[in-house]
Image (cartoon, rainbow, N blue to C red; front, side, top):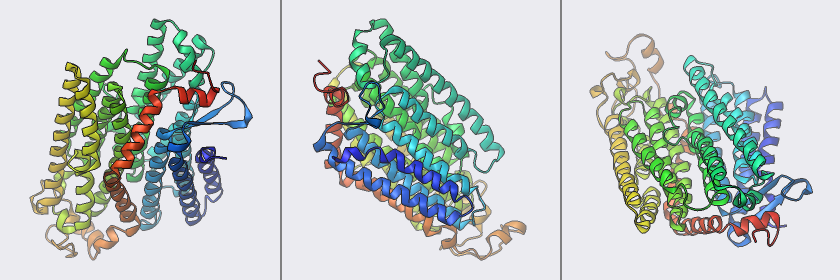
Length: 536
């Protein structure tokens, strides 16, 4: 048995963990132990798979002994293995953060008994989407993670979360219906939904029909990935959820859509037929997203717009469709999952320490909590693409691919990427200068918790700024208790992981380049599923 044969455990273990945590519904501490242990074991298995992926090549696991294209098949290559490891690593960090928040709040902020099984089901759905070898099973993976996300988004049952949840559900259902209709049409045209089999049979389909099927899939996945103009729903949906939920949504859910787009472009519909359209979409996604971020005062909404904007970079590399561009996209996806998740976790800490996530009401956080200042500054500069961080390295690879292509549209895309990076730096600098650098007294409407604290972070109890109920809430509060180690620990871990992507850029770029080569040369994927000579 080779390491890739362990791939089904990436889906099975979270499902089993969800079942056990549901049985432990009245024992929150036991739920935490089971869910964290389950994801830890899953991550270890996935690391083993990733380490073996470059040498073992693309490998298909046939479930139930049924041969493709009739049975369910899971396919492990370097891209899917990398996505498994990164997604499980950030899922584990967010889970520990959420558990720490629950313990710090006495489990009063949300139904923990529901959270743990639902969260593990979400992870199982994401892993299934990364591994699946057929379109219908990909649809099943999307539905699993989306169903879990509906529950997580509305935890607490507040009016804003319910309103945002309704929008999110409606958009997700429309996307899923479009995807399901696309699958039905593809099956009608080819008689199969196995992706390796489709890669062979779609070549015999009429080009006009191919184009229709191609665009329908891209629209369905574009909604899930939040590319412009299909991204309208995201900034209004994600910020209302609890901080850990927002973090894992921002890090993972849109990237599953990007992953599906990459598979469609490289495996099912290779070539450059719609590359110009993808370049325009990438450019508009980058620029419109970051312009939206410039207009925000709430950090969570601001980060939601930067999330949309930086999806454009991933479509950028996909549209170039060269080995350099696709490799840079693979690297950038891993970078963005890590950095964007860490920024949302830091925002949760900012909200906890400063009483709000609105920069109009924040100030002095750098003196109040120097650790919080560092935890925000490092991933913020990483997201902006400041050298030598991984964000800079990923963008440099994309720019190199665009310049190498050398078309006017490619140069326009390069210029848009550079402009977006500079505007991202401006957005992050504005948050830093207002929330961290200035005095709390200079804020337009400072939160009482900031005015109740000295510059060194110690509490002054009541003051002329803090009276009544607020004085009772904040008097005698130690800043350490406001930022418990169970929440700062996983946040530090993700920030360090983001830095590790810089220090390990050499082997990671080699892995990304190998993943790109595997995807551009479809033969290993097709033959691993259908057998030798199937691509002939």
